[in-house]
Amino acid sequence: MAYGTRLAHLQHQKAASDTLPARLRNWRERENLSQSEAALQLQISKRTLQEWEQGRAAPHGIARSAVENAIGA
Image (tube, rainbow, N blue to C red; front, side):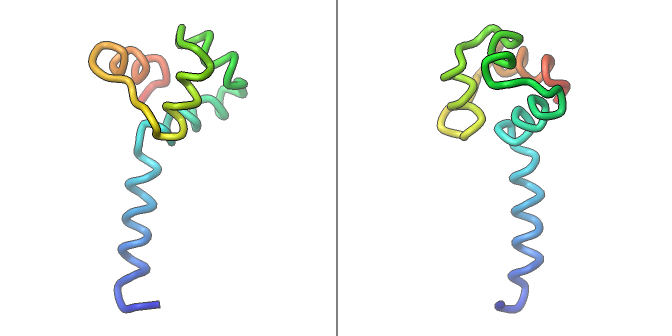
């Protein structure tokens, strides 16, 4: 391992856990919800939830505010 790599990795790992996809998945798992159940609560499609959790898409504007309020982020 190169000098300083571990610290950089830990900082990246911390930042990654603070992203919306990670918070969304953590919320769903904490509430013991399937993706289908979570999507119903958020009033979105299951596919949209999957895209958000995997970081391929993200809510914007009012939708992002609503999601963050719903998951307590």
